[in-house]
Image (cartoon, rainbow, N blue to C red; front, side, top):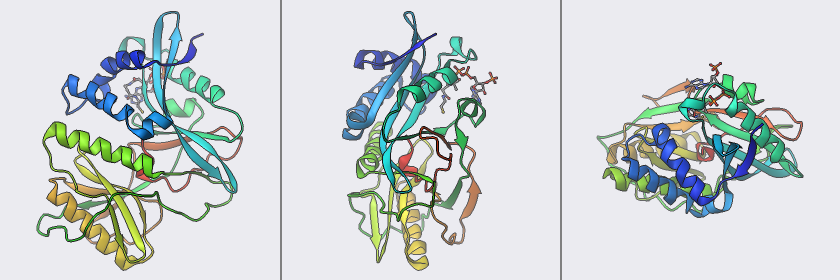
Length: 300
Ligand SMILES: CC(C)(COP(=O)(O)OP(=O)(O)OC[C@H]1O[C@@H](n2cnc3c(N)ncnc32)[C@H](O)[C@@H]1OP(=O)(O)O)[C@@H](O)C(=O)NCCC(=O)NCCS
């Protein structure tokens, strides 16, 4: 049976060379290696991230990363781990290594306050369902970029995550920090520089009692709303129009909003169920597999 070990920086770099085939799109191999080192050096990753290897003898059978975040279930405060970059080399696939590594991870990440493992699947639900994860119903609102109107507002630096009221009874909530949002902005900056693309000048928009944070995803050519807190339908509409203008000014094709609370979809937009980056959760506390308010900023 393989064993789970935390990777050293040298082992991480060796893994980067292999995972470039899965996640290096748009970048040259050297740029992908640079991306990984740059993002790992960001304060959010230094604090929250670990790379795990599923090792048998001298061979790495599978690997993944975890990002520890604050979490709560009702009044109980604790922590959860976002699992990312699950990777098995092509020659080792289909032997159950990913599933067994995730089981081992769930046994390892236990203890007081351990509430859940969560992930965003790029390969649908079946693999992760076999590892005890449950897919969450998820909706996106997608709006076309606006190229005929320039952005008018001043966007600021993200200084805090959203302050949502407590979630419903028994529901799991993962807390989005400003550090994790800043990690998205670092990622945006990296791609903007590597690809020679213009990036937004600020990432937080406040209008009246509402706010919205966003960062460019050059891989998908979209502006992603990391979180929003709309207190007023008119403010929601005008802020989303502004986000569309920012997307247009940066040459992005669309604005994508992961729905955390319902708001009226502005004309020209569409509300769609999401089948990629599918949020899934595996409770570690024996509670229900119900994860609520899954903001895009939590993606890792
Ligand atoms: C996905 C991945 C980690 C699975 O690793 P593995 O060790 O082969 O996984 P297991 O043997 O435990 O399970 C295999 C199952 O994974 C699922 N799976 C693997 N690749 C898949 C894909 N591209 N699309 C959908 N399902 C996939 C299938 O359900 C498969 O079961 P099957 O062989 O009966 O069809 C591996 O294929 C990989 O590294 N892919 C490239 C990176 C990636 O996409 N990672 C996932 C990010 S969320």
